[in-house]
Length: 364
Ligand SMILES: [Zn+2]
Image (cartoon, rainbow, N blue to C red; front, side, top):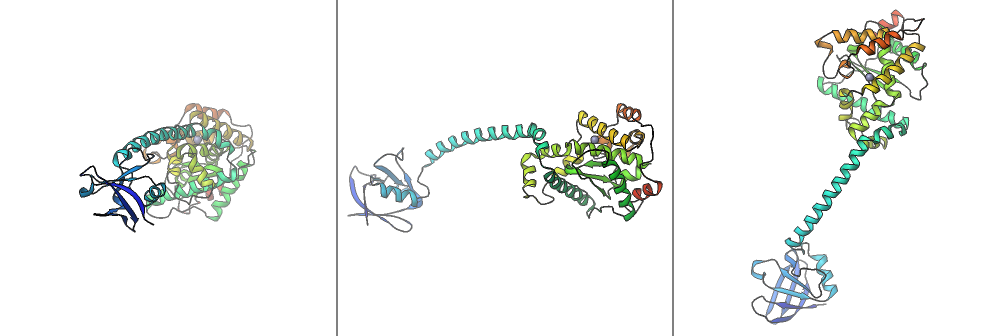
């Protein structure tokens, strides 16, 4: 059925009563002597306020620009609203855009505040609330990540060192240390074939040790001290908090909800590799480590010796991602370790096991 409207030709003050027909691509306007086609894409509001009734429309085409169509019927107006994609003129859109920008700015600011506060406060509050199984998933993703980072550097796969004897020796040492502390974590030590003196704790009890740390260590006691220290970080949930802080809580929740494959965390591994914990966190880990070593009757002198030796050596073992860069040597720390030597000590591993652990990568 044809709709009725009034039409101005823009040339005269004459007002025509016209019939409207909705064609597929536009509005057909017809009356005696008037026969126009307004494509839907060119129809605009001419009224300032689209709530006006009747409502005036114009056609955005040079030869028709002065013409006006005045429509009172709501159904006709609604049909035009549905069919015309660009009814709102530029002025109106600009006004709305400005309003939108204001809202968007306000939104960004408040989102920023939420993100900022979640980065600064939530990790500390939330880390202890994260179930251990979730931390374990996060830790696995981070370890995959670290392997990916070094794989990319060496343009190959980074080998996990697993000679049978070496693995056995590492398991003996790990269970000796873990049995000295009450913890819900199940520790997994991963040795990577990477020429770097470093070890780091990932969330959920994963500890990554780089090959060169083992080859630079002169005794199992030294390695025991470092592992115990990294266990301290895990127990304090430092790595979980660090990843949450660095990546934002959303990433943590992504991992937890299973939405994240390995490698996507990228920066999480990088963050753990290059980050240093606070002095307080380091001291807390040292305290946990000294307790573990003492109860295991392992001399913490090895831990102190390792620090002393590393700080004296130059070049090769340092670097941005070395253990020494995240654990700057401190006389205080070594002194604390030396003062904590228990009365009865025994080597952390037998000579044979130590040799096996040192050569767990099979090539040194
Ligand atoms: Zn540390």
